[in-house]
Length: 79
Image 1 (tube, one colour):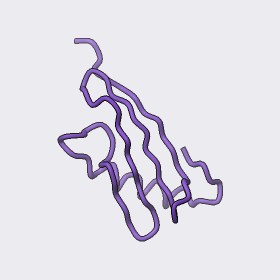
Image 2: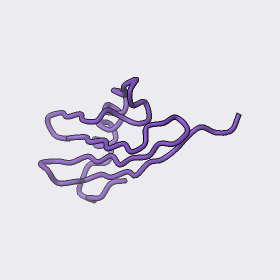
Image 3: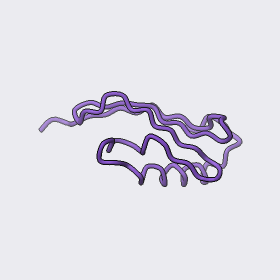
Image 4: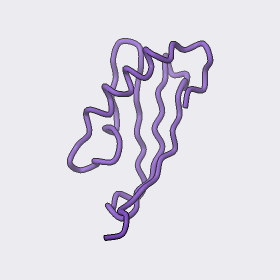
């Protein structure tokens, strides 16, 4: 979630949705490895890219200061 209370949450989450819309076939679990606009920079560091188990860390920064972090994980649910 947001790590800096001074950040406009509506603006940040609008940017996050923009980044998440740019998923790739190679990494379909969250957003791309990198996405940037004039204000925000999104980084995604996936670990384990198998459909049955994946996890990673995504961050958003402003001028190299981290303002958002999410540790994510997931996988396939039984048949």
